Amino acid sequence: MKVRVLIVGDNRSFHTYRWFNSYKRAGFEVRAVGLEEGESLCERIKAKGEGKLKYLFSLPELQRVVDDFKPDLIHAQMAGNYGLMASFIGKPYVLSLWGPDAVESPFKSAIHRALLKRVIKKAILIHTDSHLVKWFLIKNFDIEPHKVLVFPFGISRSFFEKEVEKPVGAVNLVTHRKLEKLYGHKVILKAAKILKERGRNFKLYIASFGSELQNLKRLAQELGLDDFVEFTGKLEEDELISLLAKSHIFISSAYSDTTPNSLLEAMALKAFPVLSDLPVYREWILEGLNGLYFRPGDEVDLADKLEWAMENLQSLEEPIRFNRKVAEKLADWDKNFERFIGYLANTMERVIK
Image (cartoon, rainbow, N blue to C red; front, side):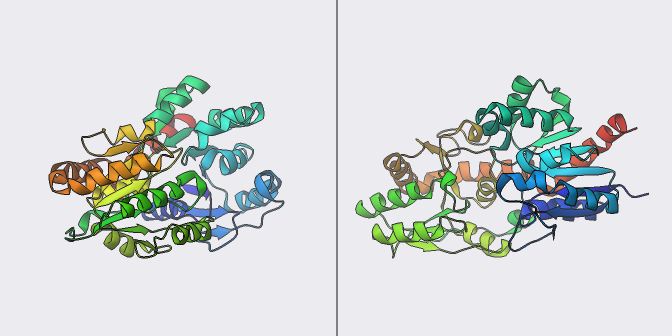
């Protein structure tokens, strides 16, 4: 008899869809539902209410799905919304943490901390992409270490199959973080202006989408970067792979983060990482060895680090090859999902009677 898994998460997100697709390929009976409006990759159930409260007000809608599908297990994506919903349903659930989901929430208020504690304590298994987050959960919520499984969301084999040959001439810079304030794209544009003023030959590709798109386009124009910056919009996987394969340097200017897939994709396709100095990135990048760090929010420091990398591209061949090997070993989604399923089977055998 097939195990039935109900995934609850952002129905617009590729992450949610990939979990759905992987469970299905592994032989599970699976559905994936969410409440988000917009272009949906999975089932959308009607939301009740608005803002964060919609997740609580929509519990009856989710309960109807549960009553109809009768899952053996719920897999909730993110603690603060779908994890919270799962904690009230009465079914065993796995919790996947996204981004700074669990690290920032406890500091917002005592209520946030209490709700997060409830969600984490009731989960039978927690998945995070960061050892730093695992340590945080153990230290702050007294979670048993065996209950937390660490592996990155990972990338598809397609990123490792692409032939990589970097062009000669202008240096291609790329960032494909979502266009939201958290990811600091204004800092990247201001650094690009400094590089332009220093006479550097480059092209900056901003390959994503989000609520800040129009603001960033206006800023690029105000900074006189029309000939230096290209906003590509949302790219299909094959288009993103082609762009990264021709990009020399990858930039992430986030103010808070866990392990971003964008970094792993860049490592797989040999784009040298220049990152805001966040502790979580040090699980992947060592300063001066296989990447560079700049002070978060400091466009001058970012410009200096980019300029150094641009001047020394020829000497970066070895760290770039090293990054690709690391990505192949640790960030292959199919391998990580196979490991997850084995861990999940043991957990269900131990916990679910």
